[in-house]
Structures are given as C-alpha cells and as structure tokens.
Image (cartoon, rainbow, N blue to C red; front, side, top):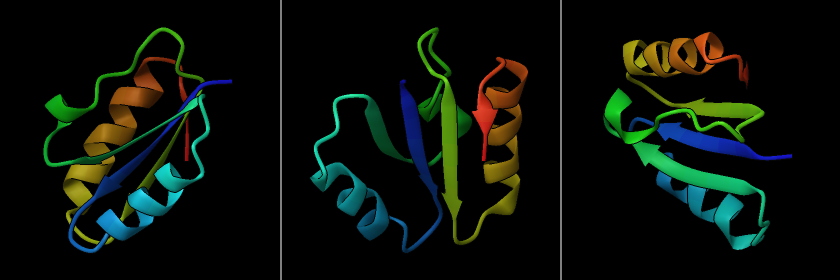
Length: 73
C-alpha cells in the first residue's frame, strides 16, 4: 500500500516529521503550501490530510486526490 500524509497550515511540520521518523517505505510525507506541491501518483492508494488552518487549500488538495480515485481522509 502506498499513501501520503499531507500537512497544511501552521503547526503541522512537527506532525509530518514524526510520521517521517517511523521510516515506512510506503508512506510519503510533506507539508503543502499549494496544490502544486502534491500531485497524486499512480501508486497512491490513500491520502491523509492534516490541516490546522487554510481550510481552502486542504479542501482543494482533498478534491484533487479524490478526483484521482485516491481514498482521502
């Protein structure tokens, strides 16, 4: 399974770094500042979006992944 954890907004860097520290091969982690920062890939099966603010960006990213057929939480 391949999935991404995407952080949006202030204060999510610590969460993303914690997830990265587990070292899972199948998990991609990033902090997004725009929808261009995270494009769904063919092997993505799930995207978890962690948002503390900037709800519009979080919703746009979720829609992009959902429209690509990726389970989005």
